[in-house]
Image (cartoon, rainbow, N blue to C red; front, side):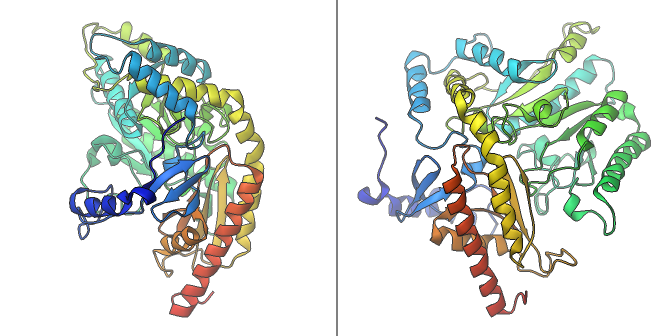
Amino acid sequence: MVAVLDFEDTGSGDEAVDLARRHLIQPWPTAGAIGAEARGLIGEGDGIYITDGKGRRLIDGPAGMWCINVGHRREELARAMYDQAMQLSYNTPWYTMNEPSAMLAQRLAAHAPGDLSHVFYTTGGSTAVETALRFMQFYNNARGQPEKKLILSRGGAYHGSTYLSASLNGRPRDRDWMDGADGLVVKLTAPNPFRRPAGMSVEAFCDFLVDEFRDAVRGIGAEKIGAFIAEPVQASGGVIVPPENYLKRVRELCRANDLLFISDEVVTAFGRLGHVFASGDVFGIEPDMITFAKGVTSGYFPLGGLMVSERLLEDLRRSNHPDAMFAHGLTYSSHPVGCAVALKNLDLLEGGILDHARKIAPYFQARLKTLEELPLVGEVRGMGLMACVECVADRESNDPLQLDRQVGSRIDAHCHELGLLVRPLINMCVMSPPLIITKDEIDDMVTILREGISRTMEDLRREGVWRG
């Protein structure tokens, strides 16, 4: 059995809150609270549920951060972690290697589309994206094209928190107070059909996005652009599902203009859309690189990676600079414990969880779609087992700006009291539960979310923030 610490019985929960306020810097803090805040304490997890510091049992609506794909408290993963640590806890990747990393590379290559047959391991999603960008720079330097370095990204994108990866981000407020490599990045329009110009069809919006991409390449010059990076579904941007065939059309433009297409699957891989990788199986594209993290270990161990096309490696081997070194690596690249956990996680996914995710996804989307009956809800959108509920001030304008900007947090607070953890994003609520969720549990989740939104509507009316 795996031992579980009971925060309530030991009294350590209150102590942890006090220690956090005195010593812990939380991710994404505001200046007024930095180093002096404590966030919601989670004591334990089991299946699709977590227990907070007050002992309340909650459905884990966001699956941690899109990552607890096989659910909490899987003894198989804990045992794999223990067994590998007892055999080999670490080896330096600079001049040694370990067996789990090689075995995992082979299994990932078997799932990847096209000729993406090689893996570079990282510590997570940000470092995976950083690796992809640095590889693009190295690749073009070795090919004798040192000016080919610009990166095309998009509004609504989220690609990480390292310097280069964060420079790609296009969400509101991400870059308000943070510096970035702005001279290397060109931002294109978010492929968000809900925010398309009034009177424009989705098909015409897709044409607009493709034309914008083509015009940007022509205007800048393909000889200066190294890569285009895209999440197949923009996750933290609000689960933005692009128009049909948009990714295929952009992929063709990349191929025609010698631009590397990087598919950022940190969220969409490992079952979130029902497959190990979604690029080929869901969207019909063969990228030059795929970044991944999160669900590769279901969040049980920090691990990420970059799948790379064999064609790119062959280009480097045939270059005129055989001594050129890709001077990039991480202390924890190819970590044996992380790779062992990922191998066992793949066993669980391939052993029935992927099939379950594909079968239950339509029910998940249909049940959440019923929330559009509520006047505060402008749209419910999603794909697979990821969805977003976007709240608007009124449905004619779809304008969220007149609404309380913390409406997502209000909904989350009500849902927390009712037994559901929600991920609030300004005026949106994101749902991405563990892939093992059942129909009855989906019903519970939607019932609580409906009540949480209803209570928020009452609050907003009472305060005069929204009339509905």
